[in-house]
Image 1: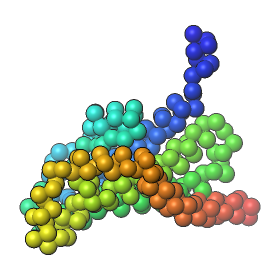
Image 2 (image 1 turned 45 degrees about the vertical axis):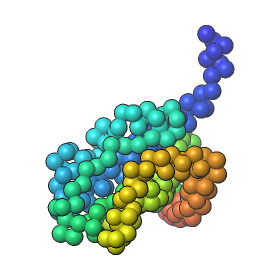
Image 3 (image 1 turned 90 degrees about the vertical axis):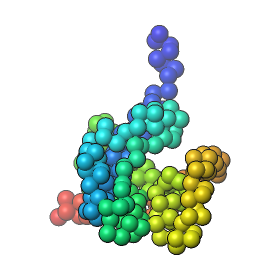
Image 4 (image 1 turned 120 degrees about the vertical axis):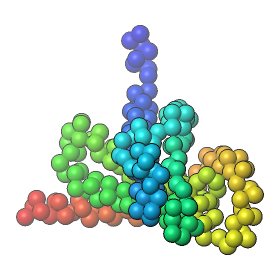
Length: 226
C-alpha cells in the first residue's frame, strides 16, 4: 500500500482538483449571467427556475460535470430563456447569449488583478499558494470558456448570437442544421485536441492580461514600500 501511495501522481490529482474548483466558479458565473441579463431584459424564466444564483449546484449537469472531471470537457445545465418575453426577441436573445462569454472575460480580468494584489501576501505559504493556483486557473479557464462559447456551433452561445442577428432568411437556413450541432461540436472538440488552437488563443489572451497582474502587483509593492 505504501508503494502504491508513493508512486501515485499527486501532482496530477492536485491539478485536477484545482481545475474542477476553477470550472465550478467559471461555469456558475457564466450561467448566472445568462439568466440575470435575460431577467433584466424582461424574461423571468431563469429567475422562476432558481438560476439567478451563485450556488454551483443550481447550474450543474451531473453527466456534464463527470465528463469534465474524467474526460477534460463537459457542460452545464443550460439556462432556459423564452425570447417571447423580450420586447425585441432576436436582439434580446443575442444579448442574453453574449452575456455568458462577456462575464467570463470580465471574471478573468478581475481575477488577474486579484492575483497581483495577493501574491505579495500569499506566495510564502502552502495554503496561500493553493489560493493563488485557484485564482490563476480560474482566470485561464474563464478565458478559455469565453472563447469556446463564442464558436458559432449549436448549442454554444456563438450560434445563438449568430442566429439572433441573422436575417430571417438566413435564420431559417441555419435552423435546418441545428440538429447536427452536437456532431459539429464534437468535431470542434476533437479538432482542438489535435491542434490546441483554442489553447493557443487563450494563452495569447492570458499573456495580454498578465499586464493587469503586473500592474496590481507593482501597485501593492509600491504602497508597501511607501
